[in-house]
Amino acid sequence: MIPAYALLAGIFAMDRTTAFNFAISRPFAVSAIIGLMCGNLEWCLIGGVFFELIGLMDLPVGTRIPSDDTFGAFAYSLVAAQAGTITLTQALCIIIAAFIIMFPVTYSAYLLRRINASFQDKYPDREGLLILIGQIFSFLRGVLFYGIGAALCYFFYAVFHTFFPPLPNFVLIVFLAAICGYFMAYFNIIIWEKLILFVAGGVISWLLF
Amino acid sequence: MASLLENALFYLKCFFYQGNININNMQGTGFAWLVRPLLRKRGIELTRKETADLRGYFNTNPSFITLVLGIFLKALTQQRDTAFSVRNSYASACAGLGDSFFWHGLRPFLFILAFFLYVHVSEYGALIYPLVYTIFHLAFILVGRRIGEALGGRTVEIFNRFKLKQWADFTDKISVILVGMILVNFIKYGEQGTVYWLPIAFLVFILGFAAHKCLRPILFLLTIITFILISGYLIGT
Image (tube, rainbow over the protein chains, first blue to last red):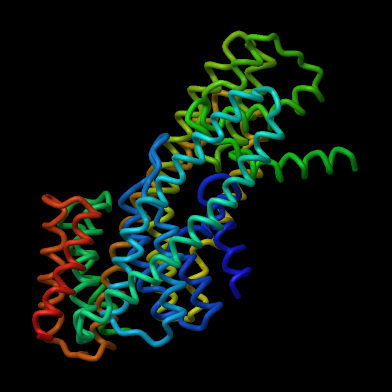
C-alpha cells in the first residue's frame, strides 16, 4: 500500500497547488478517499471535518498561502487507518500531532514558489519546461513532505496517546457543538436569521430523521 | 480533426497551467504558456515589451482562466494597446468573484452537504464534495473562453444577470440548516440519545459562536482540543 499512498500524496499536493483544481485535495475528500480505501471511514472523517473547518476559515485569498490542511487530513487519516479501531482520545491525539506538523509542511509550499521563481529567472522564455519542472517538484513535495510528515505524526501519536485515558463519547458532541458554533460566524447572514435557521434544521432532523 | 485535437490539448493544458506558480509573477508563466500557441495560430506577433508583459504578474481563480484568456484575446484584436491592462483588471475581478463563489459559497455548502449525505444516505455521499465542485470547475473552464471572446468587457453583465455573487448568500442559508440537522442527528443517535442533551449542545454551540469574537480559528481549535485532553487526563487520574 505504501506506493499507493505515496502516489496519492503526490496527486493531492499537485491538486492543492499546481494542477487539476478538482477539490480532491480538500481535507474532507482526502479523508473520505483514504477512509474508503482502508475501511475506516468513520474515524477518518472526524479528522477530515476538523481540517476542513481550518481550511474554510483560513482562505487562500490573493497570493496568500493558507495552512496545509490537505496534509493535516492526509496524515491524520493515514495514522487513524493504520491504528485500526481507535478511541476519541486517540483521534484527538492524532489531530494534535498532524496539526503541529502541518506548519513546517505549509512552509514547503513557500519553498516550492521560491524554487519555481529561481527557475523562472534562469529560463524565462521556456514556459513548457518551467511548467513541467513545477509539476514534478509539486508532486515530489507531496511524496516527501506528506510522507515524512505522516510518519512523524504516527511517532508523536504513539508517544502521546498513552498519557490520556479514554474519553466518553458525549465529548464528541460537545466538541462538535463548539466547532459548529464557531464555524457559524463565517456565514454571511445576520445573527438572528442564523439562529432561527440552525434551530429549524435541528427540529427537522429530530422529527424527520 | 486537427482543430478538435488542438482544442482538447488547450483544455488539458488548462489543468496544468499553474505549474510554475511563484513569488515573482504567480501564474504569469502559465498564462503565457496557454496563450502563445493561440497567438501563433492567429498570426499575431508580439513585440518584445508585449512578450515581457505576457509573462508578467498574473493571478486569478483557476476556474476563470479561460474566461480571462478569452477577454484578453478579444482585447488584443480590438484595442491592442490596452489588452494587458484589460487582462489584469479582469484577472483581479475574476479572482474576487472566484473567492466569493467558490471559496465562500460552494466549498462550505458542498462540505456540509457531503457530510449530511454521509450521515443520512450513504458513506459514498462524502465523495459528492469533490464531484460537484469538479463539475462547476469544468463547466467554467469549458464555456469561459467562448464567453470571454464573444462578450469581451461586457462579460461582467452576464455575471450580474446570473447574480453569481449572491449565490453564496443562498448556499450559506442552506448550510446553516444542514449544520443544525447534523448536530441534532449526532445527539439523537449518539450514545446519550436523549432530549436533555439538546439544550447542553445549544449552550456549547452559543459559547463556540461567542468565542469567534476573541479567539482566532487555529487558536480556538487548539484550545478546545487541549481543554478536552487535559480534563480527560485529570478525570483519569
